[in-house]
Image (tube, rainbow, N blue to C red):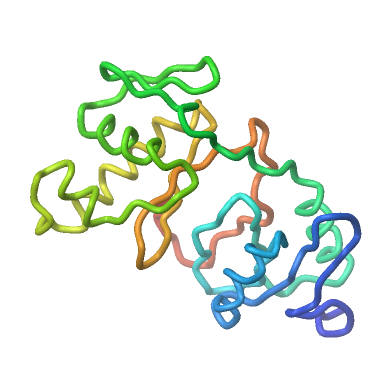
Length: 200
């Protein structure tokens, strides 16, 4: 059975709150902001060879072909996922090379500490690449790859704290909390070719 026989991209599934929108990536990427700001969750449908987008806590993806029953199952699972916690100002402490959140600590390099301290100053809000680059190196002409590399490493260090740094394309980075036991993103089959994945 084809997805076109039942649920289709653009459908909103309300099996239980919150709504889950089923959209195609990247064709319907422009609807992402409106859906998420409305409190909806998004299940992205990818062609077999399409690379997966970077996801926020209220999104997931699967590859086509997928039948209607499986699509409903995935939408239900996404709807049931625990909502991510909202970070409050002052809940992430950075001091003397240590990051502390909810009673857990990790060790940071000096540059990682600078990045995290700035992001933690405005939790759940975007800090621009330019601002972070200038803050770290006192120079906004540094290659974007230098900052990306630092963010990539910092993301791995923050995983045990259940904190994540989201890339907001064209704008910068945002620090957010993740659920302590998130459901793993579904159907992560790689395309036929071998690809090195990165969260940066």
